[in-house]
Image (cartoon, rainbow, N blue to C red):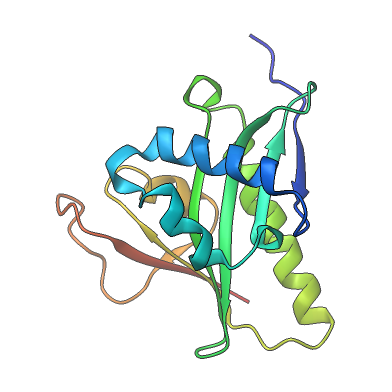
Length: 154
């Protein structure tokens, strides 16, 4: 099977339908790990803090939600999910890369950002390690199901 052509786009505040499509994918993919759909929106404040992956048909096949925290000057990757049928095709990597690019542009424009943080789990922390994230503090025992705090510094 060939990799689908994927476009990653940052939504603007008026693109609520694509936002909710991305949230629905995250909800379906993450299941009980993901908060209720209606709890996600206040966390990211608006759709402009969302990147979506779109296939050739402009269907949302993945999404990433993030939030900037003034203190301690970090971007927090809140949630990311990809359509399970498309795992392993570079979509998650493309979404994360778009967030890194956006963060670096903000830094170039004068924003003081120390890095991107996220809470990984025992099944996806290896993916984030491959993307350059490090453990915050000592390396946790991966058998523990709780969140594993990770960071990519700049």
